[in-house]
Image (cartoon, rainbow, N blue to C red; front, top):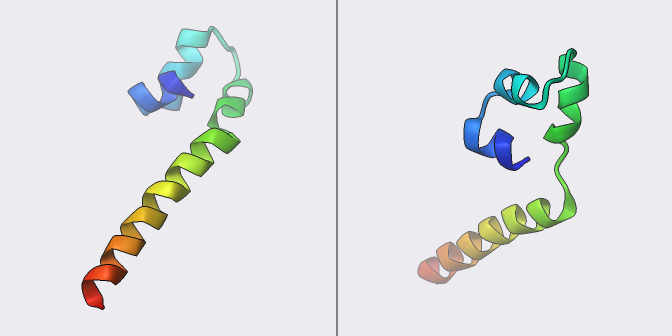
Length: 55
């Protein structure tokens, strides 16, 4: 996930990992709970701030 996040290119990640098939590399695109919690938290905090400005 970290390498994919840094490079943003699944084909580069496939080559770096030494995978023959891209299907094997697709496993790394699965969002794990900590990353999902961080993403949702960012948007939740942003929404709360926006709503506070409108009040």
